Amino acid sequence: MDDIQSLFVKNILRDAGSTLKDSGSAFAASNIALSKYWGKRDAALNLPVNSSLSVSLGDLGTRTEIRLADADSVQLNGTPVELTDGFAVRTLEFLKLFPMVGTHFDVRTENTIPTAAGLASSASGFAALVMALDDLAGWGLDKKKLSMLARLGSGSASRSVYNGFVQWNAGTSADGLDSYAEPLSSDWKDFRIGILELSKARKPVGSRDGMNRTVETSELYKSWPAQANRDIEIIRAAIEARDFPTLGKAAEHNALAMHATMMSAWPPLIYLQPESMVMIHKVQFARADGLEVYLTIDAGPNIKLLFLEENERAVVDVFQGLEVVKPFG
Ligand code: DP6
Image 1 (tube, helix red, strand yellow):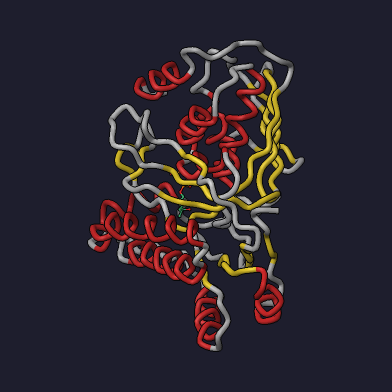
Image 2 (cartoon, rainbow, N blue to C red):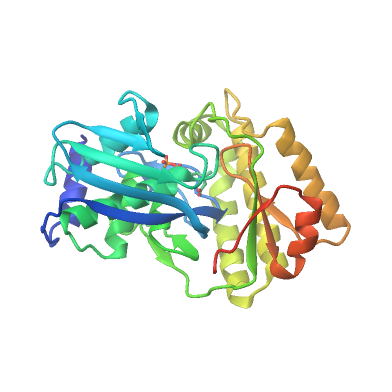
């Protein structure tokens, strides 16, 4: 464990309670960024280059249960996971940041979304893990602190401690104490997200390595922070004004600009599959036909559609097999 990380954790837990229970559990919804987090300014504290803004996925997410144990064990969707598997390694490495709670843990995780297929299961995964740990240890931390601890596991997890529209402020301080997520006040009842699962395959390069490679090797990345700062402001204002087309355009522009930085990395990062390209064109055709539908894509092949309830029927007609999520119930 990094000294800087353990100092950070101690700082966050300074006034925390300590009523240990037999087990802790929590659910966190996954989230999809409308204005993406892509690039770190500090690896140890997992501080981002730019702020990001997301919407959560209702009941799609992660439920985690955690207990102290004599030896580490990790279960994913009811099946024991080898401790050398990437998922178990990241989970247990994260728990090593909390020796004050225990040395070995039994962790049971249920995902209602495919793991590592670009549907942000690490976001809900680390948020649920931190909240379950808080429950187990009886810390009673507020959401701001939970968000900062979840951030250490995965940046996008900082946003998954809340529901609805959420902004993760990049912050500027070196100690990482001003980099946490906050809920945005508005909800938007007829807002819809459509998930098109084009591939369940694990992606060859995870977001973490992908963003590091992009920052290090992509000339185009230099233009990213300015684009991200512009988009987040446009999207924030569009949420307040319930201006869906403006939100949709900015979110789609943001996602494709991020993919442009990925493709211009070396070796190139091409998360999009042929099926993804077909869908990107299909969305453009649908829009040209007058259907108000936009897309966003994370570091994976799957496409998420953004639309309003009034167009749900038409969108589902065009995009067969779409799973429709109502972020605001
Ligand atoms: C493209 O949060 O998975 O989904 O902090 O290294 O764990 P780490 O990265 P992660 O990256 C998410 C990248 C993204 C955009 C986003 O969710 O904002």
